Length: 338
Image (tube, rainbow, N blue to C red; front, side, top):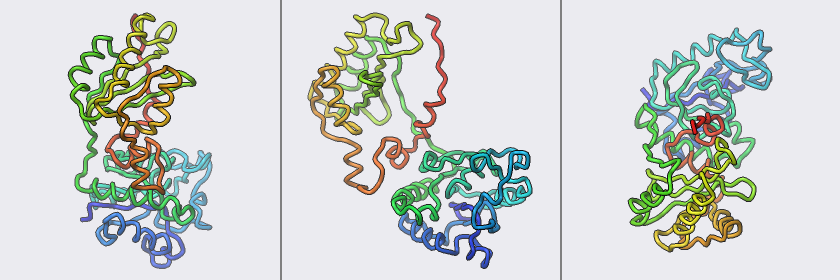
């Protein structure tokens, strides 16, 4: 059986006539996109959430008020719920996936993401692997834009190709594999110099990133490898005065450490949008960054000048991380005892 399943939304005119998925213009484009990504359409299992043609080719025609909603599913559109009468379509989709047992399911667009994940923000979901929570649970899902959206917004095309290339890699195994990382958080002053002596001084390259609010740096991260990092915080809303460090003297010594690391030429420094970070460190704190050689945003621009360049986007295509840009917004703050 195919290791890749592709789930779209519903039939269009051509699909209704042929009673098969992806026959019309979107299907033709999907074939091109799959081919560019190194996937053969003939090797994929293709289906839709709804094997029917909604009135006016608009999925909202299948929706109604919450009182008529399909149980267990959120709204598909704002204030509009898929009506319970279409439960058999979701059951059929789930059965197809169980029988096919693919290693990866490519969810094309909001409707497919809604059916498999119970979520619809495709621009935020795309490019990251998730486990399905609806219709058929436990399958590895990778959402991306529907080819119909690409036909309306051609600038989405390179993003979809990149996502499909990731799907091809993910099709080699059925489980979600997240990288293991060691991150030092809430360090003491002693931890800073211990981390530096053990890991940073002998590193070939040091990744540096700052987080800011207004004119203040809230934290700064140093990573000597892709699997090891130190996060040096300066603000903490849990503490009186909102400073992470217990005294001004401790905070001054922490900044001395940042200056010591940034102003030495070795190891070379790697940034994401480094022009911002480097100028911010100089303007706000008088810290000169020495040895800045690489910038992931600029390096990606050289490879894919037509695509997005934000860190969340780069993470979705170059790493196997989860959706950390979404997860931190729902984090829970643990109160200290002191």
